[in-house]
Every structure is written in structure tokens, then in C-alpha cells.
Amino acid sequence: MIIKKIEICGYRNLCDIIFTPVSDINVIYGENAQGKTNLLEAMWLFTGGHSFRGAKDNELIAFGASSFKMNMKFFSEQREQFAKINMTNGKRNVTINNIQKKSASVLVGKFCAVIFSPEHLSLIKEGPSNRRNFVDGGLCQSKPAYARLLMHYNRTLSQRNSLLKEITKNAQLQDTLEIWNEKLVKYGVLIVQERLAYLNMLEPIARDIYFGISSQKEQLSLSYDCSFIKDRQVKLETAFIEKLKSSQKSDLLVGYTTIGPHRDDISFYINSISARMYGSQGQQRSVALALKLAEAKVMESIIGDKPVVFLDDVMSELDKYRQDYILNHLKNRQVFITCCDPNAIKQLRQGALFNMKQGKLCEKIILS
Image 1 (cartoon, rainbow, N blue to C red):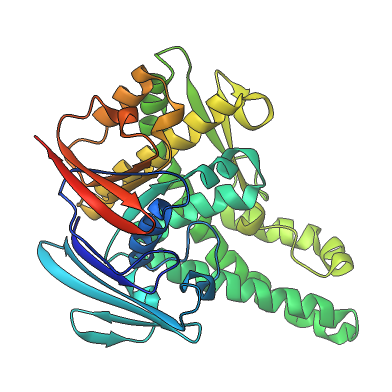
Image 2 (cartoon, helix red, strand yellow):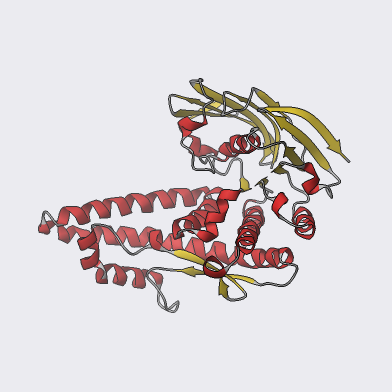
């Protein structure tokens, strides 16, 4: 996949921009608060997702403006395509190849990308929802059907939770709980199976990348921590339904479902030691970066095309060896890197440098 051109108007602190990147590595440099990350965020929205920084849609509109609009020409599915995103009154309006769409979710799988930013350190350091979102996000882009599966599970989970609260007021409703248990198990088992298959593909790639980043001194491994099964010899369906039954009293007491894929976690280990508990800041950053680069390769193997890679403010905190290693793993795909000082990637020999000042792209230098 390649972004050919993007036009942006009314987005955050960006001036009206027409950005024509090159097909390999694009470096966007400039001082802090000039709009570098905002430009990556704007391009990321075409994956069908929301801001990777957790911003609400109405926060993306420039100060004093009532709307923003973006047009992007990109190469995907062996052809050139065109997408538009307009945001007015908090609602997105999306067009793909001149056809109006009902929601931005139709962009999922149409344009695929992987992003790493400082916010992704939370993948290692913070709660399990960040790690579940990492796996689910990769799966949703690679397999749009997984997004529908996740939607069905979350809807069923919400309905079961509502029923748990109602049962405390009307005990006769407890007889209907089994119906929602069966639906939750049906979707939940499929989610766990998809996550396990995805992580089985991801782990060896992430391990090799991390081994290189760590100067071949450390080994990365991971495990999927399922909330309802410990013995992998037991069928997932059997384990899930039995666990739901055994936890029914506690679920009724707290008023929500305490068991299921929505409570699962992923653990990361460096030389068999928990990266979250004992890893240094540098180690945790390297693990997150290795996972993101591995995500790009797994996505490529699933969709048969190379996703675009966005790296926000990552190179400046790596030494020369790690910088060179990362750049070597970014060949033969389109990459966008932001940094304050272009010298941070001075070993780059091919690509383009773009200087950003006050929301404008002021200069373009082609390297060859």
C-alpha cells in the first residue's frame, strides 16, 4: 500500500496541506508542536480507526473551525483508489472511489497501516485493555470479519451485563441467563481462537526483531493469559461455559461479567522475566517497537500487501546501532518517520525529507 497524495483542510493546527510523499521512507522533521504528529494522525484516520492518541473526533477540528475535510489518493488492492473524510458537527462523512458510505468503518481493510508513537509504551506498562486492543486492532485491519465478530461479542456482553443487574430486581429473569451464556461462549471462543492464531504468527517475528534491537543479547517471548482456561487440553467451549456457571454468583453480586475474552491479557517476557514488572524504560520501548514492526509483517502475510508504517518520534531515543537496525527492517515499504532532528536518521540514503514549520510543509529534499 502506498499513499500517493493527501489533501488536508481544517485539521488541528495544520495549515491547508497538499502532501505528496515518496513511495519509500518519508522523514518529517521540525521543532516540537509544529504539526508533525498531527499529519501522521490525519493519514491514520483513513484506516477507519479513531485517533491513535485517544482524541475525540470533535477535538480534531482546527481551533475556530466548524469542520475538517481530507482527500487521499492511495494504491491498494492492485489499483489506485481515492477516499474522502469530512467531519462536520461531530459526524464523519466518508466517500470511497466517489461512492458515499454509511460510516467510516468501511475503510477498515481498505487502507491498512501500523503506527508506533510514544503513547504505545502503555502497551507494555499499563493495563490489559491496551494489550487486548493491540491484538484486536491488528486483527480488525487484517480481517474485517473479526471486527464484526468483536462487535457481536461486545453487544452480547452488554446485554448479559444488563440482565445481571435486572436479576437482582427480578429473580425470575435468571432462567434467561443461559441463553446469553450460550451466545457469549459462541462468539468468545472464536475471538480467543483468532487471537491465539494471530499471536502464534506474531511471536517469532517479534522475537527476531527484538533480538536484533537488543544487539542479540536478549530474548523476547509472550503468552496469552486466558481468563477461563488454564489447561489447554480442555475444549475452549467447555471451559468457558463451566467458568461462567461457577462465576455466576460473583457476577450477580458485582453486576457484570467477570470471565471472558474481555478480561484476558497478554504477557511479555525478556529472558523469561516480565517486561511489564521488571523491564527498564528502554527495554519496554524496544518491546513495543518490536511488536509494532512484527504487526506490519503479520498483516502483510494475511492481506498480501505491505501496510504503511508510521513511526512517531521514535528514532531520537535509539542509539546508532538500533537506528540502523530499525531502518534496515523498513525497506521495500512506505514509511513515515517524524523527528525533531533529521540527523537522527542520517544513515538514510534513500527517501525524502520534509521540514514542517507552524503546520506547513516548507521544504522537500529527495535522497537518492
